[in-house]
Image 1: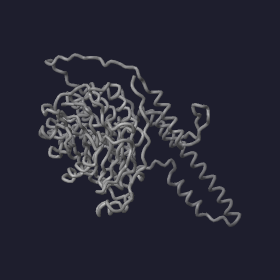
Image 2: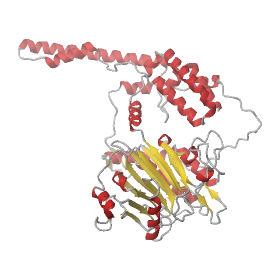
Image 3: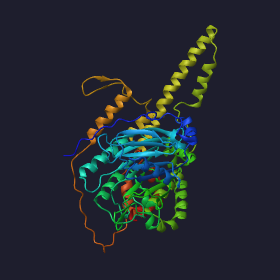
Image 4: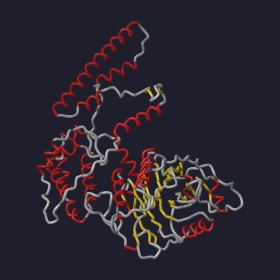
Length: 531
């Protein structure tokens, strides 16, 4: 039976710091002067992961810092630090060292080394065990980055222990939301090369063969929308492997950097000249965040697409799609399936996002003018009072009539277009009802907002969780058998059965847009499904 996981307390970022005085050095003292004062935006960040094998002695730490002095870095996630307990230490160099390990033994342990220039951007640090730690960085006024460092058990440990570590990672992913998420470390797993185009979590530059733990890693990555970034950059093989056996005959890639935002990663490479005597090699990822682009994405995401207006310019929309896809056609055979799909969704969104001015106000301009007149009226005589009363009656009558007319029109459009009745009801309502109280498991009434949200979350987690194991069907395919291409008619039938007005997936492409795209969308989807 698997051991129960231990809950670890989180360390406040201001605790455990030595006093600033002699020994810090000039750079350290200057860096520590305003250690917790926020710096500017972190547009470019260099993140590394490294199984150091030990930081127990001062010599090990000195060796690590000396080696890091020869490379560019901002954050280093560390495995096997072998330090007891959970600590934060400002080093003499001014860098910050976060470590989390077992209290009773110097085995395992993970942590982070944060460069002094970005130390002030660390919002929080948390360890859930000696195998999983997390930091959250403030990279701009409105955006944060979550980095989770992991050290998975080796093949000598039971699968139950591996599953427990993945559960810890999943809990951290769910607990603290961030704009960008990185999961990295020593996974003790070989993912190898991509086996088919359905493995979208992998790029086309993997190396070696896959093992069972590699399958488990890819299963987790797929369920969480993470990409194994080591496999997305073409490097020579000696710049890919991350561990070698004691006799030097076996070399494997088992240290990885995963993210939910592959678009910000500009490079991932193994540094073959970085060496502290470990049997692992340091993996480094370079990131670039385009804050202007991120703001525009946020605006586009929050601005709802005028689907009704799109229906009235179908011809223009379809012509734009055909022209754009014609330009991209020559690149299809030379690109990765992920890149092809990303360009498809981007093209569809770009063409569909053309908006026309539209007022969603239920009240006409004439009524709004009367309301403006009412605001300007000065009631000083009996005649003014009578005129004011009659004007109020007129406004109320017009508002009732116009609101009713607006609602009837929307209902008629919903029936004609076979749109979602629930969505129309939400649009016509005056607002959303909110819970102000909920009954807890012990029967007590809870009014606190955060506690209500937490109870609802736990309820649905239990409702939709399942521990029933279902074996996936095994489908034998003849290697010589030709697979029939997906036809346009098949796509059209599937799309016809999909309802309008439904929420989009992570690609933000609405079903309504696909339906209004006509033959050009059907042709592109058929090609994508056939690749």
